[in-house]
Image (cartoon, rainbow over the protein chains, first blue to last red):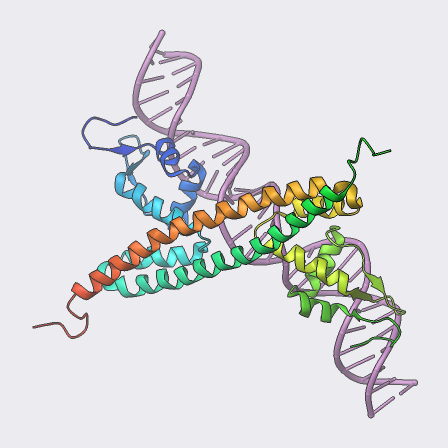
Length: 137
Length: 137
DNA sequence: GGTTGACCTGGAGCGCACTCCAGCTTCTAC
DNA sequence: GTAGAAGCTGGAGTGCGCTCCAGGTCAACC
């Protein structure tokens, strides 16, 4: 909490990291690779993240969490700067990504079946076994 | 198909790669890091994968697909060599992993909500917009 | 006014999971 | 018996997404 009492709410990088769940290094890294715009700076040249910045970070995090590659996130970020004109392309990126996520969920679910089968199998095996330590004489 | 007509079914590395969906390099890599046992060799010293080998590869692929780190897969592979005695630990690994997969599915699903929201938003925005090219005079 | 701690920069390093390469052997087909 | 395809080995290289570091600045508190 290092606000100069003038601007409503800005966050030092440590606070922004805490709130976004990213590391300080990652925040600077995201800025470097232009995933986020350079945030405002305070009088001492330190980054001062706004609520909007945090909201964008939050959305980026959703995209990362769902496995969108950073390259594509950059493309999305770039389009964002063009405002409304790029709404179509951005929508298409998200739709495409939604398909990927749905497919991924399906993939995971199908692997779950195998896991369940294997686990059941082990359960049966173990139940059938005489206890390993106290062998039944 | 390079079988000497004696052994029932073995597969050259290219065929094994094709059937497992892994690359030839990955098969050799998995062997190097002891995820799989060295397969049999034919008279010329070439790898000859069995159906059992392929089944194990198939299972490994499920684990990888669901994000199990290779280190843990190695641990699982190691336990496997101890036979029935390690059924308990192996079951525990799979149960733990199942939890991870379920959590991951939930995470993806919750991100989907955000994606859907955003996409709807774009749809509304775009619908409200006068067509970009043929501006309404 | 000196120390402490948060933050700054540019750049190097890292862990993971492959992937590629050079140089060699071996089988197959002509 | 020779060309070409497929496979072999050990080791180096790659792409991704961070993560760490050295050396410096700045502000605040004692």
